[in-house]
Image (cartoon, rainbow, N blue to C red; front, side, top):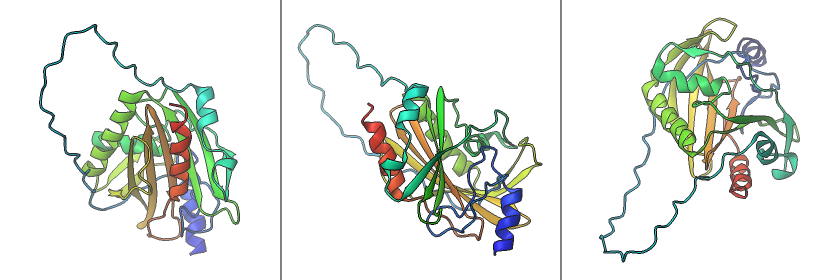
Length: 263
């Protein structure tokens, strides 16, 4: 098992350099950075429709026009750096800076899967106006190991990004390939939606993309939380087996709470 971890860690480094250590709760114990990405097979979970409430129309007396509510202002780079999780925000976790990913990442061979490779590359689409990156690890033994990137898009683009991810997971459940990351093509066995670790923010979506290394599955898990026009994306991986790694709910909750205070 340890031999597999070492080999996969070398061959599967994500373009963003996200840690591919054990992954969420119950993962392995590697603290190496994954080098390439690969993907998973499953059935996506359809989004639950929210019933709309029918409100009878009532005449409204004429009056002075009211100004339209302004959309929340997109966070600046400086604001993102203050808003992203810090060590004091989540007990039991160490937080370290992480370099931004290179501008050129992998490209999916199917256009409908492009939103998935965009996140794997550490650059959700539509393109962010600003971004901040952090590495989160358990303080005791560096487990679990989770990477986070906080990106600001504006409400419309952030909403669009989540919508595209949901559609991509459904469209790419059977797998896809990607190339252009600098270390040869990557094979993804499939994609599937997952239960969100914590229902926080204005919207949230979780999914798994299962990579393929020498025929063995490498689960990559992403949780994306939207707060206004900002997206908080959490990533973890399991390099020691096919089990889906977990992302601690406390991370999502702490980040959503921190972003809410900036609204």
